[in-house]
Image (cartoon, rainbow, N blue to C red):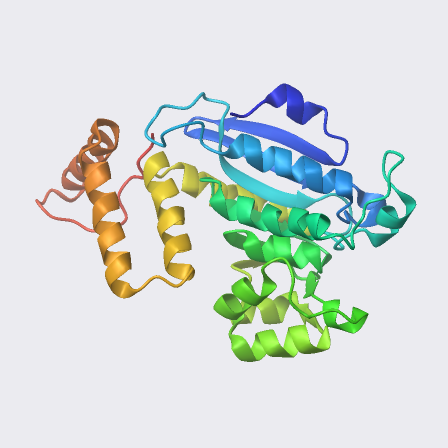
Length: 298
């Protein structure tokens, strides 16, 4: 469950809860601007804590407190989104103990963060300015939607460091978003991907002219998501995860049918659907209708 008190004590993250009529938006800011928001061990631990608190406490059909976030916007303070893993901080030590980044447990701290981001029920919007490099690129890829300013740039230069070009889920997400050819180009050379090209490829959903416009773009997306049924939104993310992870058409159709029947038979969700259909009828004066009606709220 979301714990505002615990979140306020983070030192590498800033958590701001924006309460709106249909639910709360969590503005999750990587807050190490002097280090280009590079991922130190402390930052990774705090990110794990945040996504742990975002998990649904029990059943997704159970009502949630008003301050439990329904949508997350992930961003970086200062000039960059995230410069990747902070190797310098690892060597110097954090809290008196060096981060053993050559240890498998440290590698799993990175990979399990990506898994937790996909597992939480909330949609995650990445708002990217400046560099999203290495682990920062991975965080953007693991988000559900990406908005970026025109000067943003994406890169994963692991291969230039004598490592494999794939890490933190890049070999999973990037081919699905940009295609195998572009993925091979980027991960086998360490090249940077400019925001304009990322937008043309579909990796970035919306491109804005300046960093100052990112917040408004992210808020528009989050507000539209909040206007949807909470459970419907969660099940949509769950189903997209399942299909993306290699499910067959038959498995997708079976799961979709089950989810729709679950919602149709849930009193709250059913009431929302009935209200939406009645509003369409009232607006059109006909018995049918299509999209474009008022958005529903839970």
